[in-house]
Every structure is written in structure tokens, then in C-alpha cells.
Image (cartoon, rainbow, N blue to C red; front, side, top):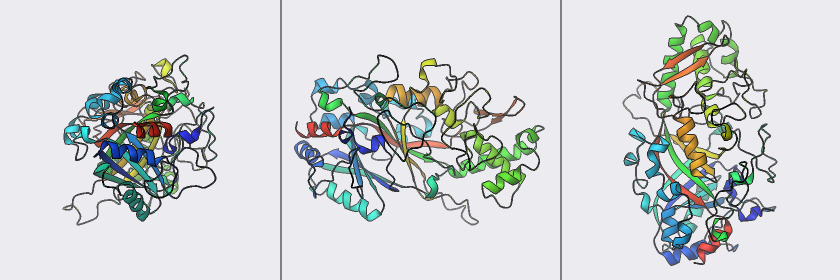
Length: 471
């Protein structure tokens, strides 16, 4: 029986608070940092913010506070070398050293990352504050750093959810997260996928690969009920994305098979559902391209359930990819999670599932206004967390094999994810499926998402935080 009060709350549940702030910290004084960790789980009010557990009882907190430690952070706290050696190699090396595996090249290369991510050895702890108001974020940050001894603040990153879970590219997001065996979450909708074993996300529990459990760093109090997180700052070129949709729609209008893509008159319903005014064939084709690149219409409707028009009445989470699915093999959501669909890597179905948490940063994109061309676009993007028991077998395998190589299906091999992949307009391509079974190949996709920083962290259990505090 798992004690969910020992698991950090941001692992198995998604907080509903719209604001988040990340404090990126360096150990300033080892003894003071240990005392701070001990105080964060003491249960006493005031002083150091308390770590939010997975089970908080009847009283829902106004703010939530959680932490993740890098390998360098564990070492800076004085974790025994025998314990450090039991952590997986990718965590020990850190995100910067794994750049090629993650597609962090070119403008995403770690050498281009701004402070503090340009000095990964100094990043020891990333604390997350979730709240409703900025004043609450400020108060928790003030209390976290009040003693001025334990931590040195290297930087912050802040995000805020948009209404209706819309993200910068205009899609509705946060629709689906894995459900775990033994975890009751009445706010989580069933999505038709099997419940994931706890070992998918927590160390020390069975996985869905028979006989395989990920190694738990010892002592047990340190490793059990912990997990790993890939924290990513992902810049999104929204203006470039909308420009590409314009160009692709214009090209399709001239294509001899355009009526297979969009039957005459079908643009009326698409524009009506997605509130595009005035309705036009070009505007509807833009949305058809956007839907196929993602695998969902921008209102969240999955193409697997409604390929011709968005349909707000369908269950946006419950679907699969069968032989008749018209969701493209290379679509973003199908690459990230093939569900029960056939893939080359036979054992990988439902074994590379991740807990994904994401909040936009930067202002919403409202289009380029007349007279604004001389003013640079503000940076906008996503603060993402990708949580799982194995960085290598889950996050890195998905990033490399599925998103940037397309190894799960020979029809998309040597192509990259159309939205998040490391694309080059000279070589990129995406196949738009038609009802007849043929395809139209779209070319010239640029890189819409680039990495601006990140770190691999270990999300310790509350027992582990107490253990580290008592070293």
C-alpha cells in the first residue's frame, strides 16, 4: 500500500492554480540548506514553506510548494558517494550533456542558453510555487529565502495559464494525463488507455514490463517514492507558426487534390466551430493543416474521432489509433503517445508514458499589428515538466526515437515532429493523409520550438527530504 502523503503532490496530480514560479537555487551553505530541507517537512506553520504532499486531507492549500534536486545539488548537500553512484547515468550527466539525444542543437544548443542555465553545475535545486495571485508567489518566495543563508537565488521563471487551457499555438492543452493504479482522482477523466502501474512514475514500484523495476538509489529512504523530472524552457515561435499555416493553406488552394483535403462548402462548419470570421476557404485550410500537424483540432477535438471537422461533443480524451484512423502517423500527439496503435518498437506501447505539466510564459499572441514590425516580438513559450521513473527510457527515448527520428513507424522515419521537432525548412516534410489513402507531402517546415534552458531533477519523497535534511 503506497502512502501518497509521502509523495510530492505535483507528481500524481495536476494543480489547478493558474500561476507558477520556478526558483532556481544554488546551495550557499550546506548545513543551512540541510536545516531548510528538514524544516520544509516539519509540518509546523510559518518559516520555510512546507512541501505539498500528494494527499493533503480535507483542507486544500491556497498555494503549493515542491522541489527537485539536480545531481550536483545532491552532491552539494553531502549525499554519500555510494548513493550518488546508484542514480542513472543520464541524471548524473545532466540535461546539457545530453543535448544531441534531445535535439538541442543549433539555436537550441546549451551554449545559447541564457543564465542561469549556462552554468549547470551551479543549479542545485528548483523550487516550484503554484498560486492564484502574484502576491502569493511573492510571499512564498520571500519565506523560502528569508534566512539568506541556505540558498543563493540564480534566477526565476514564471508562467500563467490562459483561459480554457489554451496555449500559445492556439490549441487546447492539458486534456489528458496518465491515470495510475491505486490513485483515485475524481477530476481525471477516463481516456480508454490502461491504468499505468505506479512504477511508470515512482521508483520502487512494479512497471508494465514484467519483472522490471527501475533501480532505487539506496538507502531506501532516499530513493523510494521518488521520480525524475525533465524541466524545460521551450520558446515558441508563434508568429512563424501562423505564417507557415498561411503559406501551407495558399499552396493547398493550388493543389489539384485540394477538394479531398477540404470538400467545397466544408469550410463553413470549420470556421463556425472555431470562431473564424469571416469564414473562408483559406482560413479553413489553415485549420486543417494545424489539426493534422498536431493530431487535434485547435479546440481539442482529436482527428482520430472527427477528421473532417472539429466536434465539441466528442470525448476529447477517449480514443485510439486503429487501422482506419485518419490521424496522421507523424502528428505530434501520435508521436508523443501512440496509445494502442501499432509501432515498430513492440514493447514500447504504453511503456514510455510520461506525466506532462506545462504552463505558458510570455503574453498571448494577438497577431502582428500594423506599425508593429519594428518592435521585436516578446519571448513566449512553455515551461514544461516531463516526469517519469526513467529519464532514459521515457523522456529521452520519446524525444529522440519518436519526436526527432520517427523510428516508431517506417512511414515517418527520417522526419521530425512537425511542431516540436528539430526541423530544417530545406529537408523537413509532413504527409497530410487523404480519404483516398494517398497523401499530400507538405515541405519547408521551420523549427517552431527551441530550447532556452532546463535541467534534470530528482523529485524526492518527503521521507527522502527528511533524510537529506538529517545528513
